[in-house]
Length: 85
Image 1 (cartoon, rainbow, N blue to C red):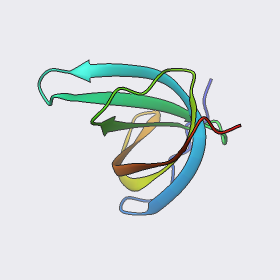
Image 2: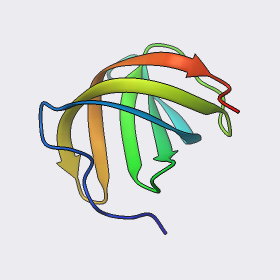
Image 3: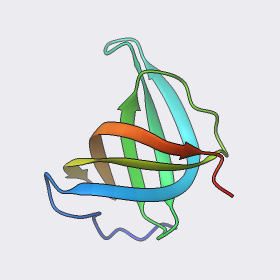
Image 4: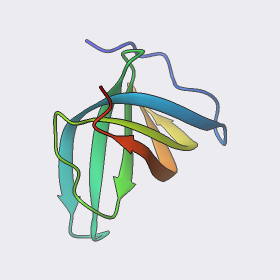
């Protein structure tokens, strides 16, 4: 189970590393929703224009959009590094 502590405060800019655990496509918004478990064991999710492979480790940055239940939603996400070792 993940730590339910929210990541940052709304509008904070954050950079983190984690593993992609789920990717789902939204027809309504024509985008992929990506869920990541961070190295700090927190759940974050964000919309991303292309499909990212699950089980891939990535380093990314984004702005905290809101806290939704157990997870934190990010916006304006950019990949810093893929396949972090």
